[in-house]
Every structure is written in C-alpha cells, then in structure tokens.
Image 1 (cartoon, rainbow, N blue to C red):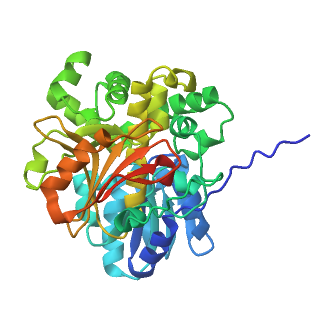
Image 2: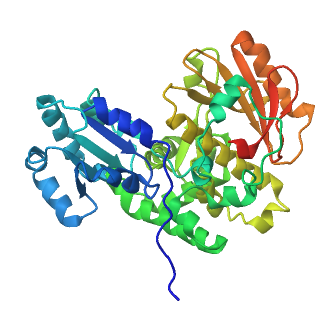
Image 3: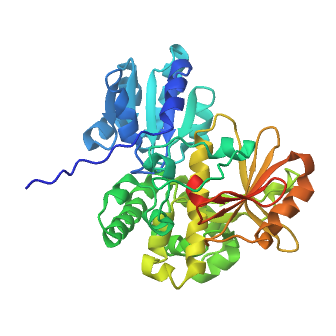
Length: 412
C-alpha cells in the first residue's frame, strides 16, 4: 500500500493583496520566515514569470559575480531567497528606474530586508513589501479571517461554536503554524522538526544578514527569549545570564528579529514619543517553536497552566500579526501596562486612533475581574475605545458590559 506524502496546500489570505500589488508596483517582495510557504505562494505565478531560486549554489554564484548582467536579461521574473545576494537588490533599483512597468519582479526573502539600511534605501518607492507568516488558524480551517471586522462591529454570534469551528487549543498552540511542522504525525516529530529548523537558521542564515563572532551564544539567547516570551525586555538581566552586555544582547535580538524568530512589542501610550522609550515586551513569532524550546508538552499543560498561558499568549500574538498583515489599513500593535501593574496584553490602534484591547485567558471561564485592564484602557481613551475582548477557551461569545466581550479563542 502506498502512502500519499504530498503536502497539503492551503489557500493563503495574502494572495489577494499580492495580486493587487503586482497590478501597480514594479516589484513586490514577499518577506517572511523560512519554510512559512513563500515559495509555494509565488510559484503559483510561474505561468506568467520565469522562476529562479538563489538557494541554487550555481545560480547564486553567477548572480553574485554579475548581478547587473543577470537582471538585465530578465523581462519578468520570480527570484526566491533574494536576501542571499544583497547586491542584486541594489541592482534592481537601476533596472526598475529604467522600466517601471508594474509586476516585473516578484521576490521572496527569508530575512527582514527592510531592517537592513542600505537595502531599505535602495528599495524605497520601488518595491512593495508584503509579509507572509506561517499558517494562521483561519487558513488551517480554510475560512476567511473576519475577526477584526467582527470586533469593530461587535457582531459576535451569541450561538455556540459549531462542531467544525471548535478546536483543541492545546494542540493548536503546540503545533504552531509552519506547514512542515503541521504535517508531522506526532508531537515528538513536530518538535524534532522545530529544533532542526532553528539550528539551520543559526548555522546558516545568520551569516546572510550579519557577521557575528559569538554564534555559539545565539542558541542560549533564543532559549532565554522563549522562556521570557510575553514579558518585558530587560537587556541587562538577559545579558547577565549568558555573559553579554546589554548592548550586545540588543544587537543579537535584532538579528533574531530579522530572521522572524522573535519580535519586540512596543508599549502603548497616548504620547507616541513615549512609546519609543517605554519597555517593550518580547514575543516569539510562532508558538510551536516557542513551546519546543521551553519543552512544553500536552501532558505538562495539564499541570503547568502558567507555562501554557505564556505559549497561548504567543499564539495570539502570532495570530494578530497574521491578521494585520492582510489588512489594507496600517494598524499599530502594542501592549499596555501602567504604574499600578494593570495590563492589557494587546492593544490594536487603527490609523483613525480607534482602540481595541485584548486580554488572553487560558481558561474556559471568564469573570468580571478579568476585564480590569480593559476597563482602565477604556477610561483613558474615552470615545476612541471600540471594544475590549477577553479571549478564552470557551464556545460562546458573552457580553460583559458596554463594549466588553468574552470571545472564544477559536474566533481568532
């Protein structure tokens, strides 16, 4: 008996934005972590454009030797893993300035290229950047993601989740969103893939974006970041654990951010300048990777709810990033914490300064006290407050006063 080992293909919500961008922009870059599905997405356009992958050593050597000669021979092309040849991106500027037809180049990158100053300067105004994250919960369920529109309208259905909408949140969190990790049959095999994935990034991809001497300390830093996911960043404290000064920790965290492993979540404040100086939180971008590093299993979840709560918050953070990446408007995502230690896990702010607050609870019940931080946020922002949501592991959306709702995690 033969086994069907073909990977499952999921429609990606970013595809509609990608198609729109190719209609009016000379080049589009799909940025995102390795193995998140970028190649699968862009190769759907192979009937319109020639495909080249810079993971091919021979092609990479040729492109590095003569980037202008390579680009000038192309009319329209898909170029995969473009961060491996930074000079090619600088050459694209010249070629695009000579011929600004829309949809000429479709690029992918596994590093946050816009965080590299020389590249960001050359691409400004010529390339539209779209970010593809690992699979979202709604993509895995093959449903549209209408969480943001429902939150703004407060149009939550009061009926229970249907059977096909219900999900085992423990398994959802521990499996993460990487397609390959999702394909593995058991938790042990999924975690084996995650460990190999992170080792490969550290051993190979760091050198594409930064020349550093102490690569041996990166795994330690990554493990500490996983343990601290969802907590305030204290660079000196982190450095003290691995023999680094705060400035070096900041640099290395920046490298992990460029590889889409972690991200710092800024603090929300009415004063936008103070957002730059208040302590951010650190978050992993995938709960499956984070829970692998913290060695969290479904068995441990039953007895160590605090550890699961951190992974669940990481999962929600990742889902919100995926949601905002396909939203045409530019929303600001942050956290709220005041001098009384009253907190809101996530604050979403629209370009019109509308505010949505979100609190995460790893439980199947909700009480009025769970809305303390959301009520504080509502007092501060007044009429700009749209809604406050406690995401919980239940099956009903429940009203808890003006603008306040308990909403099942599965709605995200």
